[in-house]
Amino acid sequence: MPFSDFEIIYSYTRAQALDDGVLVDISAAAREYGFKLPTAVTDNLFHGHVVPPEGLEGEGQSVEGRLHDLLSLAMIAARRGMNHNRVEFEVLFLMRPGGREKVTVILHVGPGDQGEAVLTLMLPGDE
Image (cartoon, rainbow, N blue to C red; front, side, top):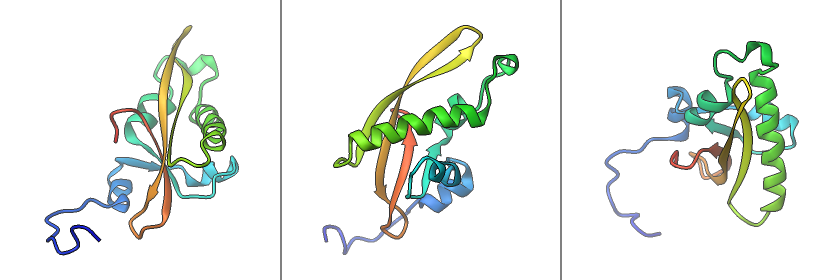
């Protein structure tokens, strides 16, 4: 294994990122859409798009509904990219009354803290 004899100066684990809020665990919701891996979204994606902006209360927007849209499209993308560890897809989010924003989302399957497969949904630049 390359670099196995190097001293680790610092590491930041997925568990720490979840504890710190850098990642938001959505595993329970993701299971309802067929995902079997532990699933998290980045703070930027969650608070910037999944949580509805102020002013949309009367527009039928909710975290649950926006998460539904995200996870439904993520499952389609996951099926399309079965043999890849990274797939991009687009989601339309209502960001102000009458104003939608098309957002590119990255679905990435990678190793967790113990080498297990985990899934992360993120915005470009969140990597």
